[in-house]
Length: 159
Image (tube, rainbow, N blue to C red; front, side):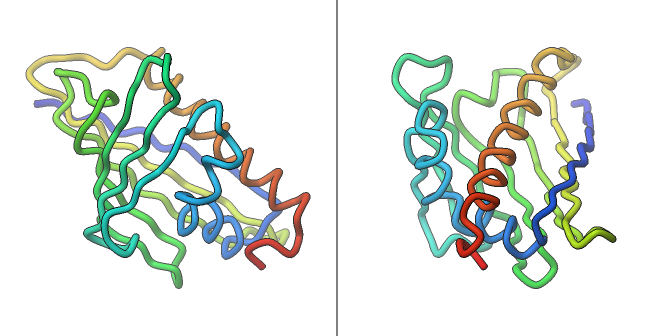
């Protein structure tokens, strides 16, 4: 097994509290509304906190049908979120699991900095392709930007 880790950082003019509440805590409600072309629905088993299982269902006709992940940590005081992709089309035969560690921090200008660390646990001597990693990062960034745009247009939302 090989372990590959990647870290991505993005900035936002929004406070960590607002972007965290919208993009993480209430993602199962907000994301399918903002991006119905990409996310059909998100089902939550549990209270949404640690130990909960979330299933993301994709629209018919796409490359993926669904993925399932386990929430490992959800801390609304430190704006940290950790989860593990455990099942579904996003896990190829050559991937055991993928873990994500997300943290939102206050930036000097009153906005926020989000840091996402993704760790891929591969099976055998399988090598990840840069294009696949890049495509995954682009999808996450598109979701983040959709939430950010919504919050900027709706200053009262998640205030």
